[in-house]
Each structure stands twice: as C-alpha cells, then as structure tokens.
Amino acid sequence: MRRLILVFALSVFALLAPVARAAPIPVRVVVLTTFETGASAARVSGEFQAWADRWPLTHPLKIPGVEGRVLYSDDGVLGVVTGMRARARESVAALILDPRLDLSHAYWIVAGIAGVDPRAGSIGSAAWARYVVDADPIFEMDDREIPAGWPDGLWSLGAARPGVKGKATGSSGMVWKLNPGLVAWAYGLTRDVALPDSDLLRAARANYPSEPAALRPPSVFLGDDLGTTRFWHGERRTRWARDWVKLWTDGDGVFAMTECEDQGILDVLDIFSREGRVDLARVLVLRTASNYSREGDGAPSDLKFAPGGAAAAFEAAYRVGTPVVKALVAGWDRYAVTPPAGAAR
Image (cartoon, rainbow, N blue to C red; front, side, top):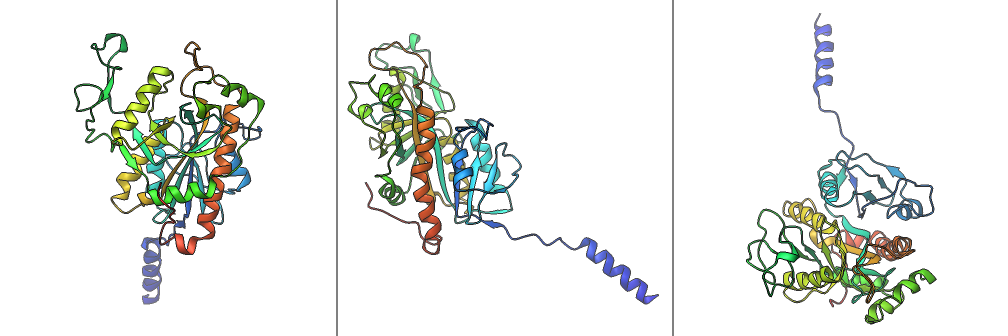
C-alpha cells in the first residue's frame, strides 16, 4: 500500500512540477525590415528577401504579435519583417516580450527603403542616421487656411505656431540621437561600398539639376531620418521636413530620409531600454533611397516614382548592412560587452 501511495505521490509531483524550458535564443543582431510582397520566388520581393536568401536565415520562428516572417541563423542573427507604419511598433514590442529570445545584448539594425531629399542624396543611396525624429504627434491645419506668415499648417504639440519645439509627453520621445561612436563605426566600415547604378537611375537623377547631391551616383552617407506613419511628398512638405528635423535636433540634424516606421521602432526600444530589456546604445538605422521626397525641378507635383528605384534600394540595404552585421558577429567576444566605436562626426 505504501508503495502505491509513493508511486501516486511521485506521479502527481511530476505532473505538477514546472516543465523545464529551453534556454532563450541568444540574439546577437536583429535586422528589421518592414515588408515583402509575398512573392518570395520573385527576383525582387521586398526588403527581407536578400537577408533571408543570402545571409542565409534558415530557422523560422513564429512570434505572437508579429504578422511577418521571422527567421534566425546559427550565428545569432534574427531577421524580421515587422510590417509597415504603426505595425512595426507592435512587432518590435512582441519581439522584446517573447521569452524565447534573449535580446539583452543584441544590436538592432533597421534596413529599409525610404524617400530621399534630393538636397541630401540620390536614389539608390544609403544613409546611416545620426538622429531619428518623430513627426506623428502633431497639430495640423489645412495649408489653405493657415494664418498669414506661417510656412505651413503643421506644428508641434504644446506650441502655438510652427517653428517652436513643443512636447509630446505620453505620446513619443520625439527625437533620438543614436550612439555617435557606433554610427561612425558603421559608416566607416561601409562608406566605400559600391552600390548599383543603372540607366534608369541616371535618368531619374537628371530631373534635379538644381541639387548637386541628387546628381551624384548612389553612395553611402550620413543623413538623418524623419518618421511619419502618413506618406507625404512634394516640395512644400520637403521644406517642412528640413525645418522639423532642424527644430527637434536643435539645429544639429540634417534631413535626408523620410520613412514610416523608425519613429515607432525607436520609441518602443527607448521604453524597453529603461527596463534593461534592450540597449538603446546598440541601435542603428540604415535607410536606402527608393524615391525622391519631391518631384523633379519644375515638374508638377505627382506621386510617380522612378523606375528601378525600389530594386536599387533593396540591394543597397543588403550590401551596406551586411558588413556591419558580419563584423558584429565576428567580433562578438568584444562587442557583446562593449559596442564598437568610430570617430564621431
């Protein structure tokens, strides 16, 4: 009888005892892309394909709350399709909260396409951001109804007119200065990477004779990043973007790239970094130009994008991002402890 009781007790204990969990996956680098078309067999199907196929990323992982694909490699690289606009914010939060991932020492690299200010660069180019600036929490008035003397109908929360920095408490951190040494290091590794050019890109560049930067072949440069979930385009909005970035960086930032996700990504990473779940000093933003932020000189405003721009930008993101990811993985014994640093610029 005692033996039966003992067997029964041991059986109950085994059922009630916590199931041993596998150790979390130690992630070295997270590569964030925002979309793919779904046609993975196509020659060009979005920002994620080159990373998945060429790194390669071979192990699928289903993360609750992330709609897009998540794949990781044996060397600790996690590639993610976050979704676009506000969906990226949700996906990054889901990644951080998944107990199967150890992101405490991970580096984060956004590798996505964007619109480029022709004053800053040409399509097919790649820019490492020093600043990410949010322009979602904003007051807006129809430009046809703005008071005399206002440059546009967009201005900061907490302010009474354009050109005044307000505040967005409870909504956003608004501006993030990325780790200057890490950004300089990444730029130094990649500034001479050869980027693809084509007759299509040369034809697009020719529409901007007033902007020397827009006439240059694709290149890698330092340029700051403005995020809005709304898509905007045109000469007036490009002037507004230049002013907005200058305002929120106290004159230090220079607008280069416009995109729809980085403000949400940085805001989430910022919040979780305060709890020690991620390290904000290990974040890089690489945006590559698929289109210009305004129409060509003298051309009527429209939303026609240059043929070949998206394909060139997809390729540029992989070519420029890869050396950085490889260096982080190869030097992990050092970089797990201390981020690499270059001469700040």
